Length: 265
Length: 265
Image (cartoon, rainbow over all chains, first blue to last red; front, side, top):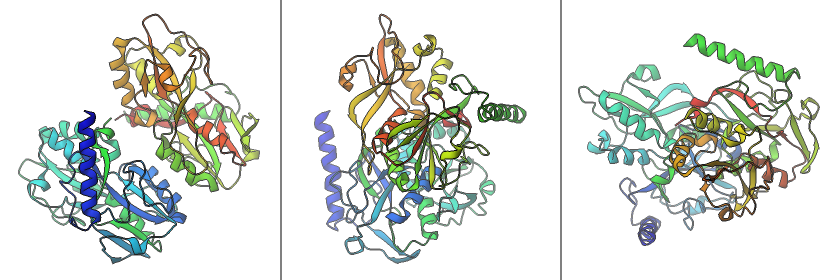
């Protein structure tokens, strides 16, 4: 058991080294099986309290896995030895809320007042859905999960406010109890669905036109199931127009050394 | 159902009004059955980010239920209309880490830079234990739960650091699976136990001499079961010696309008 854990941890570090060296620059889906991938937001310290407060007030879309020390690029708890400046395959750099660049590292953007926020990602509950024998439609269809801006407002905090973003996965009604119970075991990874069945109830007009990701075919007899989405804090932070914000590029996540099971309740 | 909810919510407000008016000044155990009682910490805004970061880094002892806006005494999410300056039966006021006073309100201590932190309390999982047909020894014995300072260090954040404090409840080995699964459903209320059986493994020398609360008799065949305790953040904040800190007095909790079941996963 000890041997197995050591081997697996090495594998994560190897994956991260390939990313750091620019050998892997694509999405991280499927990499380091069993390990938690995280959303990344980096903000100047002056915004850090209000942003952390925003996340605490909106735990379903913004489950915090780790907050780094200002100026330190190392997430000491979830990935000791890693470097948030180089270990994400592709970043997005925003200045005053405008996307400026999508680089493979942010060494030249780094500032000594940057605080890193690692936020739970749906890859964890998708692994649990697959593990329970359920299908995940967008994976079957080789697409990014479709994401929609809802008419529900997050609880604001300082300059951070805006609508909740949800992701959608279709399931049959008889699968719903299992879908809810399996994903509900991961409250730090968006948890159980927020809504089942009626896109209009969330202010979503057209499932074929997601604001982020790609549309996914819904088969006859399936219902749309909606989860709080980790894009929410990015969208909200972008709107607050901080002088500098760095995030991962969608799908290009930061890979931690924590296992999915460590977040299961 | 709607009618029932309205009636219950009124009852909470009536309890809170009695506390506000000084008619109830004792512990809150047993009041407003079904509703979440919370630990309170009030700190100046300059300490708020580091303290919130401390809580996020140590979620088992410090599960955050709400963070208020600086200067606002109203916990708008968990108890809209309540007033953190008057609605706790008894407070503790610390200056530079020293206990100065245990007043029934803090109107004259209030400052416009105070941020309130409401933190989950074991009353919620104790209600769940009772609901599952299990006994809670210190309640049977009419005592406060015994609490111990361990040799495990919390993950520090800025000036906040210190040992984990645990509470102890004795159970029989055959009760343990139910004890773990029932309390594990409330990760926002300290969740599943941290340790079972060996006080020495936590650096606890003598179960008969708790640092806080009162000793509880352990019957033949019972084992001590330890949970992360909400006294941890108070002890840690006291040690950081902020110019002003206000907390509830032990057992004299803030009663929210949220039901236990809202935090069940």
